[in-house]
Length: 492
Image 1 (cartoon, rainbow, N blue to C red):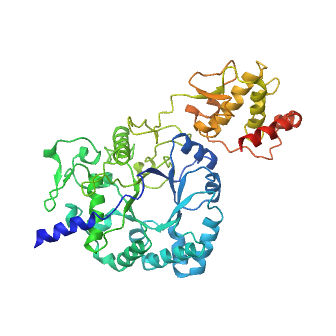
Image 2: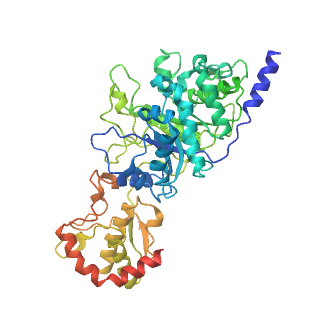
Image 3: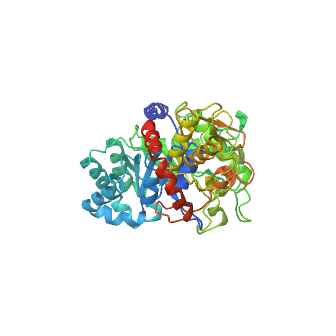
């Protein structure tokens, strides 16, 4: 009878389907003493081909910078706003109006996190969590966006008890009065369970019971795999075991078709003396292997071939974050966009292939029509918002004073400004991507944007700047206005 029940459970959980291709996203924290400007953040995201991000709020400047980027965005209701929203439908409606309707669809908002780890971090607000979820969703329904934007709340994996073997896992029963109506909501709205999974802490708290290779996705022989004695499924890493434990815990409460999305996971690259495994090598191994595991559609033992989309914690090291040294060192990049370590991702596509030491440049094609090149320069220096002051007479990139050299500078500047996306190096077929550095003399290409061609942490230039070099460009721009208009129309 027991085995029959377990078989039924096994088949029930398998109802979870893969509705879309699995993806890797990143969380963007802001506890930095030198936080990059939002436009620089977006440039870094584009250069790393990151197409999914999660924000811990709904920052106006960040949402504006993400407009028309094509990046899918998860925004959040901060925990401190949860009580007000959970008590008032109109407050929720106003929040959606300010933070969603004001930006969507230009900014591709796909999900809303209502709070984060509410059940364990702000238990006094837990009784209002489901209300807040429903009120935010109702506001989306009123705007006819409920089919476009999902609503959920990230949960810590620590609310799953007896997580190994996964088939015996269940949620902390003391939280069921919130969890059950929450799961009802997720199921009825076809949303997903958001789960924060931290094998690093599982490993640290196991006192050596969990081998390091089992948390780093290392290849291990079958005799070192952990076996679920009920299902006979083999687990080679903690991440998969926790995800499957979440599926089993839901099925224990008769919810069998709610997919899981991992909203946070990662590994710190530096720690205090009592955190010896917070190292660059381990962080690199964990995140590199995680990315390959998700994007290669490995799936979990319960759901082979059905990967769980995952957001890495996090994009930047947060040097002002409170707590242990490790708390400040979960990032993939520093505030200048320089990789903390180079991920090892051979065979896993271009997402987060963050070896930015391999420079590429956008230059004029050999034999390009000089008139078309000039039109391209005019567009880049005008609507393209490139700072072309270095091309003025007496400035570093004025010589050689010919259209090809000036096009190289203007085209490459725009290319780097747009995060080195291939489509930004076209200019009506007049430009091409090259690995040869066109810098000459004191005219330095791309490195003016910061080390390893990622933007340095400087504020974006003001469109109302009164800098004298910008004023000098005014007369020149007037003369070439016709060219600018023609080029701008051509690019539409």
